Length: 261
Image (cartoon, rainbow, N blue to C red; front, side, top):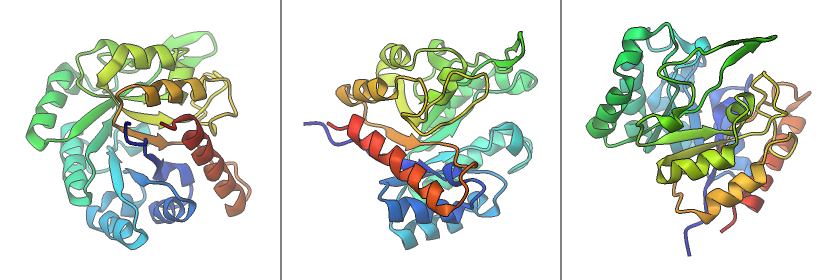
């Protein structure tokens, strides 16, 4: 029988809470691990601090999310390749095996030119999985802007490893189950969240939107998938800590139920 899928927590799921509170919540609520979202919280940029949190709370860091979002364009400098090198260094320090990275923005043309080949080179150099995440077109009213190169959808690109985010696939109006089947063994990492299919990237607790989260998890659990399932939900509207933790517990229970092997 295949090993049970681990269910970990992204530190972004406790925002505006801190990276430290993300580790504490993951440990106390029973998550199997943590994904560190490298961002504006200084602790998230400090590999030694993250390792100390991991050891103190006795919860492993399973993945590092590189600072490649709009809001983190100046974290660890402005050189995108430098950010990925720093992310790899952090992964080695904390014992993570996966670096999650977004595709380049359209205006990062030089970075985008050699992105696919460069990701493969980084994997060889660091012996880590660099899992490129699916994104989505930006929509305002009836206008649609393709903001990523070589594409917002990594399925058709020559990446060895891909992260599939169910909130992003919803925003893009893609079927995550079909994407998982097409990716096959290239599916290396999952960001679990739900959505109503809104143009906004909602990151709802799974089961609260319209996406086939349960079907997707059953599909992944029945496959040869050996990667991480990471809960990445927004709890910014929670009125207090109790409500936030109830959301995180609900997400964990959903994942464990439908990803059981």
